[in-house]
Amino acid sequence: MDCLKNLPKFDNISIDISRTLMEMTDILFAFCYENRVMDDDLSAESAFTINRLSSVLCCHAVDKALNDVIKHSFKRALGYPLIRHYDMAKKTLQDLLGILSLGKKAILRIFLRIKRLFDSSDPRYLLNNLYINNFCWFIQNIEDQNLI
Image 1 (cartoon, rainbow, N blue to C red):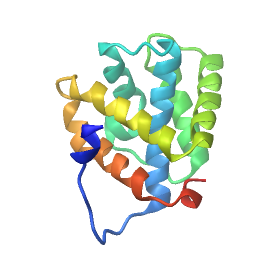
Image 2: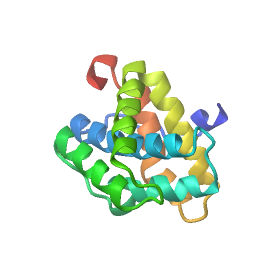
Image 3: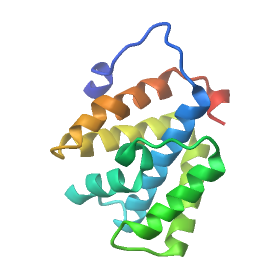
Image 4: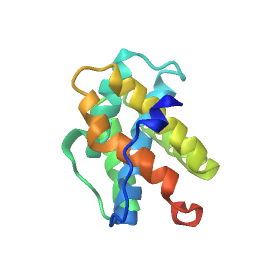
């Protein structure tokens, strides 16, 4: 858990909570898809796939509504990865809902896994500085009722 000590610390920062939650949902969907396809045995290519499936990480696009996040995640899941199947995307959505129901600890654990994946992937380590570290900080500092 040394990586938690190295996360940035912010004081008195203004955050759009709903926008941040939409971005996190997009990234979590991409992780869940890759995790399901790889049967929880993530590889070196997993960082590339998560990056490609997430519209936030790939092209810095943010949706304003949860329905749009899910719709665009499905479109990306059916267009970009090697394994493209609608039922796989539906099961991924169920996985995502299961993770969100587990709370902050489970979500933080997933973002730390993504951080480790991106640290070992040459151009994607920059995404840790741009997004993942901030999301890890956000998850730790948000109140539980705001996550729902």
